[in-house]
Length: 236
Ligand code: IYR
Image (cartoon, rainbow, N blue to C red):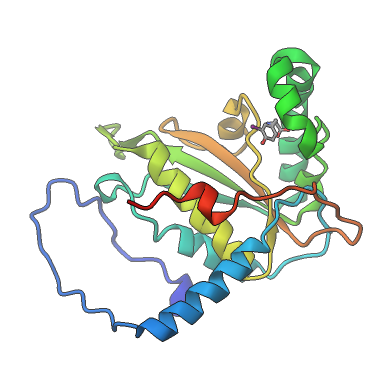
């Protein structure tokens, strides 16, 4: 097994441990090099698009695992790392998830979302058909651990769970994109069925379903315009 797939042998929560700092001395990158890296990264990130039409071609599974490992380096409230990434490859499980998601989405698109929401979605061309869930060769179902659950049933509060998992998902999307894979953040609502289908414990709540793969040959995306830097940045 390579280093990148090794599982930490005896990880235990650090809850209540004393502060034990260790030196951190990352090599400083000179400004010119920083600038060329940031410009290149900015260009590559701007090429990311949410994909809703996937090829059924397989992806190198290790790339997805590596991206999940990148996501799991995210900062988290009290370093509680309140996430679980379920990598769903089994086509039958993907079909089950698709069917359950589509049942809910049909109700949503038939009116549950409301007129304002449906109007906001119109430029994206979304609908209740979720073929991406069975076309994409992998789904990453992200769960947030609402609290820590010990083996004896002890519960401990987790802090800033939404923020922590949101940051981790952002890092996952970046890692997938920079590794050459396309993804879609799908948030079927309600998502309770995911815990049942994937047999997750009671402390876990589904956060997003992320189909991962290559865009279909005939993939199209909405002609969206991103806000420019000066529209999103305020410098004081
Ligand atoms: N969850 C639904 C609807 C939806 C909602 C938002 I906000 C989007 O940005 C996209 C879709 C769906 O997945 O179709």
